[in-house]
Image (cartoon, rainbow, N blue to C red):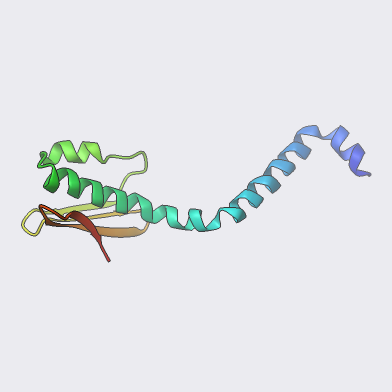
Length: 109
């Protein structure tokens, strides 16, 4: 069966195959950004919560609602004594710490 006959007889299958190939090509082009994405969830949550809570001095409930995302975090810990915030999500964990009035919060290595 020639390619033209396949496309004519199965237009939806041909379109689906074409879209899968395009999607795989796009995924290959964006592989570095896609690998970094899981780290962004926990880093954003930890850093923004720390800034909301310890720089802006907002209540914990407000800051928790402020950093809530569509993709939930799996674990969250707010150490109010040391002013450290640890958030985990999508298999990654990040910690942000309040450094002072002039420095604000920073992600810790």
